[in-house]
Image: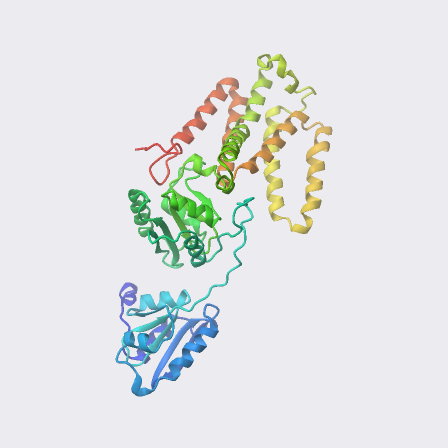
Amino acid sequence: MSENKAEKRKVSASREDNAAYMNKVLPVQESFDVIQRDMLIGGRMSSFYFIDGFTKDEVMLKIMDSMMKVKEEEMPADAAQFTRTCVPYVEVEVLEDYDAVLRGVLSGVTCLFIDGYEGCIAIDCRTYPARSVDEPSKDKSLRGSRDGFVETIVFNTALMRRRIRDPRLVMEMLEVGDSSRTDVAVCYMKDRADQELLHNVISRIRKIKVGDLRMNQQSLAECLFRRKWYNPFPKFKYTERPDTAAACLLEGKVVILVDNSPSAMILPTSIFDIIEEANDYYFPTLTNVYLKFARGLITLMTVFLTPVFLLFMQNIQWLPESFAFVAVKESVNVPLIFQLLMLEIAIDGLRLAAMSTPSMLSTPLSVIAGLVMGEFSVQSGWFNSEVMLYMAFVAVANYTQPNFELGYALKFMRLELLVLTAAFNWIGFIIGCAIIIYSICFNKTLSGRNYLNVKLN
């Protein structure tokens, strides 16, 4: 019998046949955490199958104790009636095929076979190992809530449902991956979401044919939308804050949650959505507008500050007298373009080192990096103080960008602009600006629109 036919095989009324099939498919003898528990219920032989570590022991003890009190003459005629009269629990259903049974057992559901019942009783009393609901380390807010998404998808949906008590909030559960069978929740407001986008997202998720989502949300994003490698701008917005996700739902957006991922994917996306952050929702209008304006201005400066500086240094006669103080005054031992490129790589090296450094050593690392990258690097003659100043501003200004992917996309645009300016002077600068504008205007997202929310063919 082929594998597909085996998956569609119906559950038998014989407990022995069901147990033989389950023991053949599941590594009950080899794997210590796959448990088979046989017991008598109402005078009939029964078998429990569950995963150790996914089951609430106290709940199962109470359920088993209740079932063992059922007398033989009180046994119902079928499994459905048994769940109504003899299972004192909320989430119970009857499964009729082995594919659903195996999926349930491997995801933590306790499955019960009773001799004479043509069906498997699934008791969803599972619990997953999970960390506490803490504030995200990146998406911090001065006045907002202090909870954040975790790796358990049910907890994440509950955090949003707590904020939106509306019957029109729909959380549709899908499954992706032949091996991982990862749960994916598509969340939307039925009366506000773009129905065309919603249908497109759900149909694409259902058509995904992969073995697993090993990188969770990133793997799903790559399956949903095949990005062009030469356009680094992100196609999706991510957030680890349930209040931000709830606000986006109320705006008519679609939120996608992936099990084992502590962040939400938000659609559709524009450049204005990506540069937003949580504090924008918690301040008065005037403060909100100022913060957005300041963030947008700093974002532009991170892209154009060093290329414009390089352009003026290559054409010093263009520099107005009132800005003559920005010119490099010391002798240039290393060409400016190489100084800028080396510092770009050095800053990323320091960032990677900080991510991999134990917290107890982070302070000594910061002191050493500050000394080496600061005074000593200028005194050695490798770098000019002006170059160090502008690159320091760019490095710090990158952290004003709430989106990590967008920060690196802007970095790549800055590098491209530096190289073209160094190679072709002002002509290269104009070409680089045109490439940046093209990359933003023609960056097609999953909704079929670009970053400026214009429909693309």
